Length: 464
View 1 (cartoon, rainbow, N blue to C red):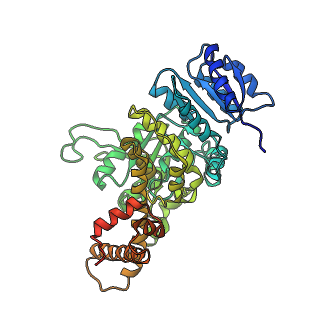
View 2: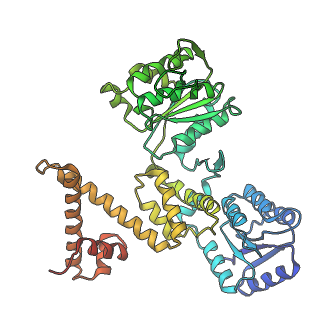
């Protein structure tokens, strides 16, 4: 028989300590108390590490957030629940981002306390164990962070630390939404240029003429509407770092001018014959197949070799799913603070559903999922949406195979029609096999009951 869990209660109010100790000891927990953050830290630094800490947010001296930060430094896997007499959204969000498991607002009912403790002390799942080993989020700015919670991202973090101090171009490759811009900002932050300017230019967002003037600037009369001189991003970024995002979309003519900048660190503004010298570190990113682009003459081979002094390949989220629990919690804290809302719980079923999903949109899609959950406030609704999307992705994959053997026609309509056929056929078969027991059919199809009802209505499927 396992021994009762141990709980450390930290509160500067003696009456609250006695009250909580009595409640917990009735349930056979082993209880220790501390009246300050410093006393709690001293106890946790000893041999007897508690299974859970109940920590008051507002205390003199070291407050709850400072104490939480120190406790997590000592034992990163330590489970902490914050207690507060005020519902301060910002402080709650900050506590969650520092690693708190949950929070309770005083006064609370014993049932609320029991539910939180039960959730925190349940046996750790593989996902929870992975999260405990994941490490901390590395903040780069208010809304930008780098997570190295998987072997692949830890390798990339090591690569970044090695290349940051070497003044060479870096090419970042990977699918859209994998975090290439974040890696670029991390390189800049760790480099000797960190105190200088960092600028990003999206090469796919502007036509060739505007992109050239954006990068290199122009003189009066260079084109219609150019009434005064304007420096380009390269001049504004002198001594700093520039990220050329989606560089695979840069027109070939402009690629030749960029090649000269890489070679000589010199260029001329549009409408000028005077050369401008700059000292800019160039980082580039693209989600295209760069070798295919070179083979089809869409990307200059000599420019590729100039940029390819160091290459970093960003893996898609589906290849680093161990980061998902940490990312969910961090996004929840980030967006709750931004939208001035109380953070919602990231439950085990929610984490498991996210671990199963393919995430074709990578981190950007996961961000939007958390935003939607926070706005709707209904876990079952967002889980249903996720299962519908998973079914659509699976249906699209099957449809694309079947579409290859059909007669040519309007491709989008053809693929959509074949996907719908595949879904109708699969749903109809499942309903027939279960004699129209829709709950059994949803289990057979591995989607939620709500998602199945949505599909039945969408395709107007009936017994006939």
